[in-house]
Image 1 (cartoon, rainbow, N blue to C red):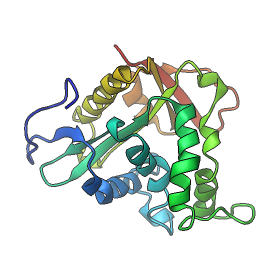
Image 2: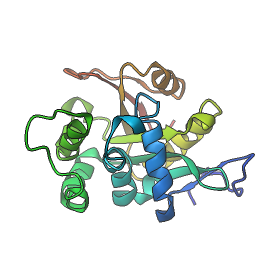
Image 3: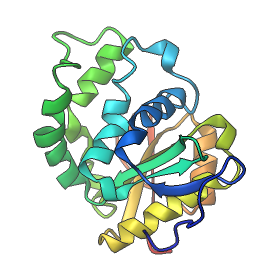
Length: 215
């Protein structure tokens, strides 16, 4: 068990953080889809309900299970945080080990993307987009999501610091996160837990934030 993780058993009144388990897969996918539209529900926006989770959640749990944690309410996972300690290595493993597992279900678009599903499928097949030269000093990155009923209660902070400790132990001194600029609630959360803006040219719709893992 990671140092600093909650050691009590989860209950409906006191959810607890624990490592991700294979049986959390369904909850992981559900949480991802319920929070994927700037923190809101995206299930009605996509035909394929596994596409976004297979880009932003599942590959982390598969490739770096030691850096995947969930918030358990005593029944199931209601939030998660996943990450990598080395983005460049993760991108290589994503292409070599993860993409072959999901490319048949999510083929690359044969033409210019015309739908949200097409746009996301194109991202799935282009993991190299995660390598941003301006972020070289922040080699780790993360994704965090909590169901609405568990937001604003300190659980996001607890999940984040659980991952920060694990990243520091893995040798990653700094971590970054890329967030949709319009998601002001998310920006407020990251500011409160010590992230600061990073200067990234041509960032498009994203804002990049970073912080040290050991403070």
